[in-house]
Length: 255
Image (cartoon, rainbow, N blue to C red; front, top):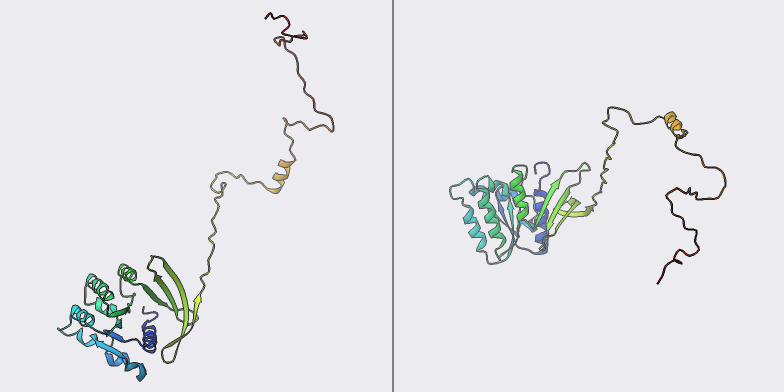
């Protein structure tokens, strides 16, 4: 983005790949190859091949598919960096560029495709589609502390997505040090409980004096319990009740 340029991180990646012994080709549209290689030491310049898209994009011979054919016919495996995809999208249709990236990512000679995108220039839909195409998306964000903050979104083969944030320091010679994972603080959201008396036209709340008076009130249908005593059951016989005084109520039956 314009707020936090990604080219410094790209230069660090190139330096790391050269140190690892990888072959690197840069398809450069934003700068002249001479200016792109200028900040690197000679030990890195000699091992990076820069393809001049900066000059060719303004000529009539520019053709996206000719670049694809040129890159696809390489015999030795290499890492491809595109600087930047934003400039290509200013000259080409988005669907054509999307298909070209898919095609390049499937070429056996290309070990890895890394493309710089200035997301401030593009719509949210285009940036989201490019993120979904990529295995790993790195977004640089400016922080108040001045340290670069990198938001990483990595999509694993099984479909699981890993998201994390990392702080790091860029040293002289384009080397990255002090890589530290930033722990994201989980803030518990407080759920506001509805107040049943909030929108009423009358007041249901009691003052302290009103509560005291309510607690001391004796209702007329409550009988205060007497002290002591045993429990007893009282039954009053009614006229309709049938009470048999005989010892054996079945004695008059014949079998």
